[in-house]
Length: 75
Image (cartoon, rainbow, N blue to C red; front, side):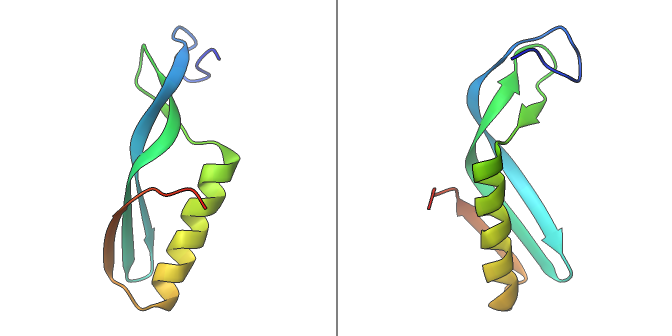
């Protein structure tokens, strides 16, 4: 797809690192599948991966974690 940010590059399949913060929790998830622009580097995570990230953040927050670093694993 054409990048909606720079409007010049094309996105290709790749991975990214996502950092989510909520109250006292900082969750860092590595190797998240994403579309990455070959021009500006902007990264786009699809709905399914985003839903999984939010679910993981909710679980970590309920567990009382303050810092959690993990690799992405699709449910």
